Length: 130
Ligand SMILES: NC(=O)c1ccc[n+]([C@@H]2O[C@H](COP(=O)([O-])OP(=O)(O)OC[C@H]3O[C@@H](n4cnc5c(N)ncnc54)[C@H](O)[C@@H]3O)[C@@H](O)[C@H]2O)c1
Image (cartoon, rainbow, N blue to C red; front, side, top):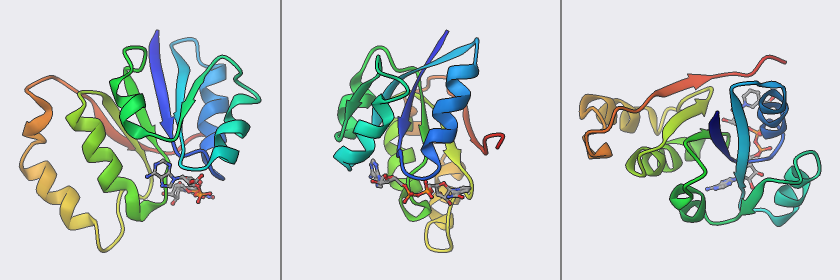
């Protein structure tokens, strides 16, 4: 069972939480959001999950194998980079980047995210079924 952490639980994040509740292959274990109200909301349908406003806490958690990033697009790169550096699988909600950050993603792809310490990770973009 893949243990998944969500980063960002605003308008769109609950869609991923719902899909994870329906999944037989993945389970939501963590939610990180800067907003305490968002973390309270995340616990309502998933009372067993752990919540934190600190990304590092989620990234250091042994019970989080993969991270879904659902923060505002302008912040995708900063969060995604830290997820890869932490050695977690990554899914970034679409759009991957905006005009300002697309070059950063392109450079990272060119560098093959080598700072991931040679581990074989899966990085992808996606959108949940509505
Ligand atoms: N809203 C939609 O209909 C929709 C549809 C498709 C895709 N998306 C995409 O999903 C992403 C999120 O959109 P949204 O509408 O849910 O935004 P939102 O502003 O409603 O929610 C974003 C959440 O991320 C949190 N956040 C921001 N920076 C953070 C950080 N550094 N660490 C942790 N949490 C952080 C905020 O507190 C907020 O709760 C965007 O990329 C957007 O383009 C949204």
